[in-house]
Image (cartoon, rainbow, N blue to C red; front, side, top):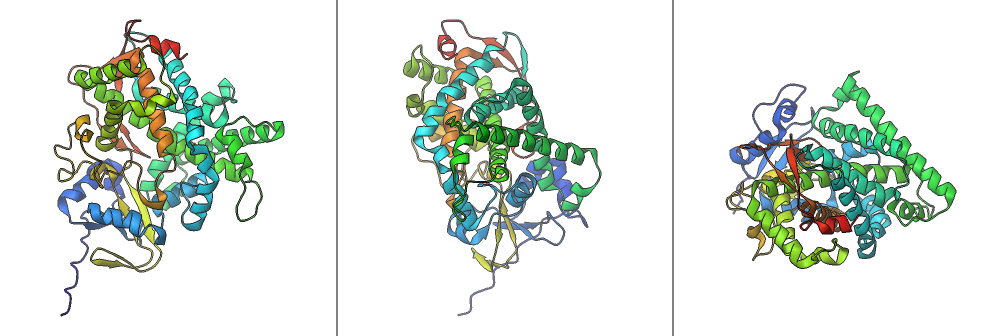
Length: 456
């Protein structure tokens, strides 16, 4: 019996000559990608680059096939290729054996022992940030969380060796780079060659960040000191192919990519958690009660990370409802079968974690923030906060530790309030983040936040 041919992969409506679907993506990429789940089947084709076929994978089983089963045979695709062009080759952007080699070089930075050492640094930075907030202050929470994420990055990567002026400049330049990466991934390549102010700002900021990191690398190499941070660890690492230490350029690319990827995602998740706690006093009270029971009057430590199950559920729910990833890519390197369909070499594959995590068939009442949906069951296979397969995020444990430490420190010192009727919309740049998140700071009574003071 002859098997019936699979149905053709539908093509999304609204493509423009030369621009493909870029206008819809620039106008509202989240709405466009989400609409595909409602309008098409398990696969749908869009155009990101003229002459290039991009297939959006929407079926959870096929997404798993793409990430896990086909993972070893796929390249990382446009999103990561573009990050590599813009930021340099790194463990985040590499594929194949190069990725495996770089992952082994970087893995020591994310061991249990090293993450435990970072917790005190993370907590102290969170406490110092909170100490600058005044009761009644209107705060741009996302910008504050970007600043905190960069502070924590500085301490864990550079051991705080950057002077204040250099650090402020690095923070400003990284913000420009983070926004620019997101825009350049969506737009056709030829746009970035135009003499536009946007392009000039991005290029200048990227070179400034590289110069700052290169200077830190050179100074540490000249001193011969091992400061116990990620930078020292990278300077001790050897290239498996040559047996030689990594070059300054290689170290710079790893740090720059970690800075852009880690800072942006951490800041966004922290912002969403604080927003949801402000929206639901009942959830906030349960977090406070758990922190009080576990910590008493002392600051959070590494040993506490696994003893805060309700806070972990709150973070899981934020990673579900407000996932920071809106387009994860792969690329076929040979003729590849996925489900019923056979795709030629050079086909771009992509999926949207944000849309996947809001699918009502997978997550009942998907737009409700409900930490208790994680209470009695293991996360479903469709919950992919850090990806899956051989390219799963190398820093997943580091990120979760950072989130728990920061939230536990912040919410014991202050609570946030929203204006009546205020809602916050997501916007996707390099990551999905709050479009505008301004809340009012209310300091807790001394008896409620002694632990935050104790951590300073």
